[in-house]
Image 1 (cartoon, rainbow, N blue to C red):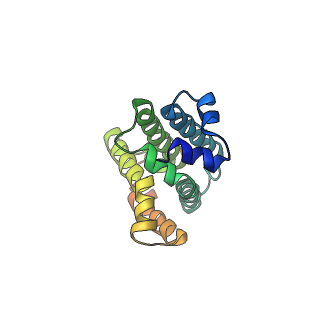
Image 2 (spheres, one colour; image 1 turned 45 degrees about the vertical axis):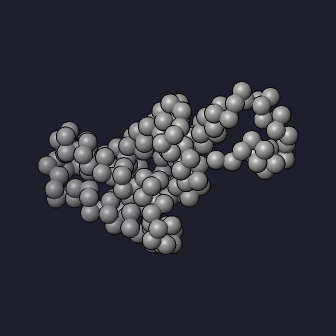
Image 3 (cartoon, one colour; image 1 turned 90 degrees about the vertical axis):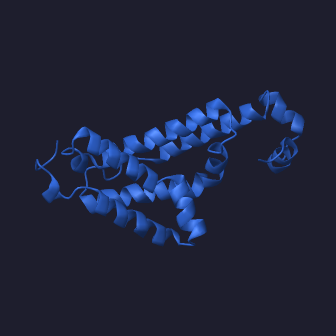
Length: 172
């Protein structure tokens, strides 16, 4: 985490101006996290929620990957173990919002699953497309953005029930 002096220098301000707006660095960190969450929500449009399966998967992974590319450095900090309770709460909220997005995108596939299976699948999908997963794909394994998208697309397609697996044809 950068110091107050480093932050002020980066922003082209005096350290004093940071503390005129925020009582301490924890408050600044929380405000930064809240700003990022709002920005990410605004960029997650409802594109292709009614498209065919490949289109929905493509739209979902592209949206998620863009968010990971943009916010991963901040996420690493926010999700670190030594954060204040408010930041840990934000981490949980972001993860829950990710699950809600998947419920919307994959509602046709999820509809026929009994609740325990559906919940387990959503948890597995959330882990698959987490910030931490994207970090591994891009920085540990050195995949390009397109190769990372291919991994996510393929894995999601294999994990979701197919139309032939569904007990009820059509939409819920």
